[in-house]
Image 1 (cartoon, rainbow, N blue to C red):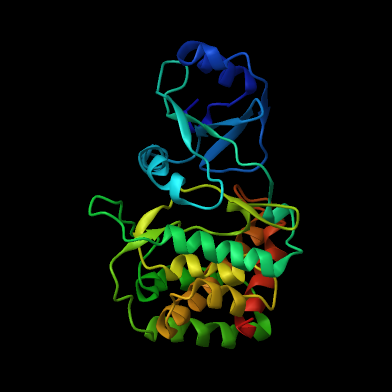
Image 2 (image 1 turned 90 degrees about the horizontal axis):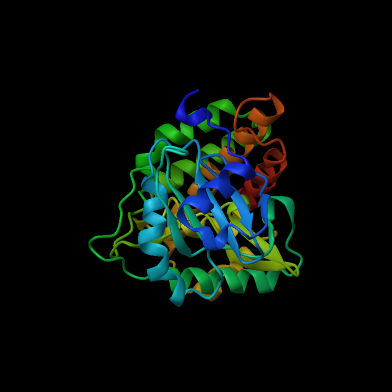
Length: 298
């Protein structure tokens, strides 16, 4: 059995806690559905254990350990904050982290009924997050770059998903984003991977943001794409009015990136329908609805 094939069970999680954080081992342990690179286990009512699973290196977890305690105090929504570190051992040769639990239901299994409130909430969160990043902030080759550097990824998704009558408009939207001027401000903190499985909702609105593995310094357009990926139709304009920091070029890049991310969600749904590893059947309709919103610009 290879490292990536180690079965992560409640018993293993408890054994690791007994070895490294015995005071936490008495808390109830419950598996959290979802997760690919990392697997989550609920620990009591207020904590969670994030176990490195398919991620080939611990880089993403170590990044969260380093930077989330710095960012969390200034963010207006709850985010998972590391409280204990689990180190590789003979029992489990990978990293794991005990983090605060962010209450709510993942948006890919929930819905937003208070669209205006959610638009204002997301805009306020991103205004707070999008501060100039320090020189030592991580840089990502996958997230935070200009769309013109992501053409291979777009082409892969575009060719893999059946778009029918949406194909020409999707291509035009992407070409416009590629042609848009680059971000001319300093690199800012970006979450980078805001999609419906990485935010939680409660009482009909956004209640928290999770999974900061893609956190990096870069172009805020990567996060502003969430106006179409997360929010109900008709609320994108309110979001950008409240955010109030995006010029026309940034919105053009954001729309193209939203189209690419929608295609990714659709492909993951397609993979799920085919029973492929990591596929998520319920993401297909989510991605198509998001693509429809971004094409309509609402």
